[in-house]
Amino acid sequence: MCKMQESASTMVEGYLSLENIILRSIEEEHDELSCPQKEETSCSEKEELIDIATLVQSNCSKVPYYDLHIIYSASYRVPVLFFRAYYGDGEPLGFNEIEKDLPAHSAKALLDSKWMFITQEEHPYLNRPWFKLHPCGTSEWMKLLFHVDVSVAKNGVTVELYLLSWLSVVGQVVGLRIPLEMLNQQ
Image (cartoon, rainbow, N blue to C red; front, top):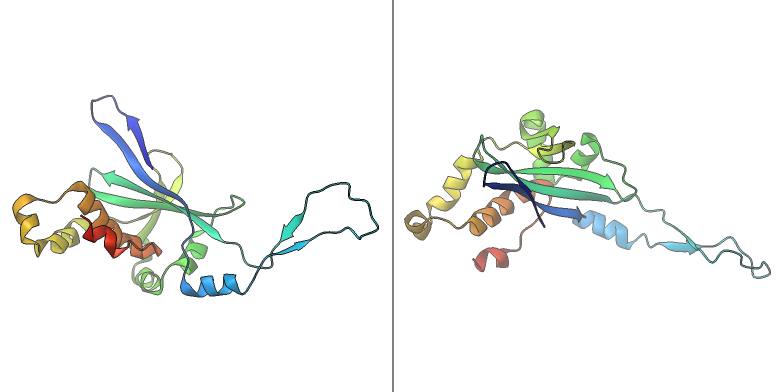
């Protein structure tokens, strides 16, 4: 989904969003399969049913949802990934809970430079605190990514290919994987 906002000039600004995403690791998928939900009712056969509602309870842990927004940074001149995490009931996850959700390679990078890697700041369009992956160095590694492709050096890169390539690298930090087929179609 693309959210846009008209500015005073003729330029259109906005952000791309993926919302209500469940990022699952193989271990979590296994745990979820081994923990099915059970229906429980408090009525016996002799009692008359007054309310037909059924309470569904689960002994499984809460599943976190993620909202991912891609916002162009005018100062770094690259896209930046903003994200937030929350449970189904709307309760937000703190940084320590998000850190537990990250893939192992991202958690290791956080140990090296926690506040240079992921920071929390105000979302530029929603004016609420969100986490973001720091864009420092993005321009350099994107140049390296496209440097080997002769046709890109000659003709330039399309916005779609640039964003897919960028997201295929940056998305891995939070556990989002871009299918290789999407890159091959470009």
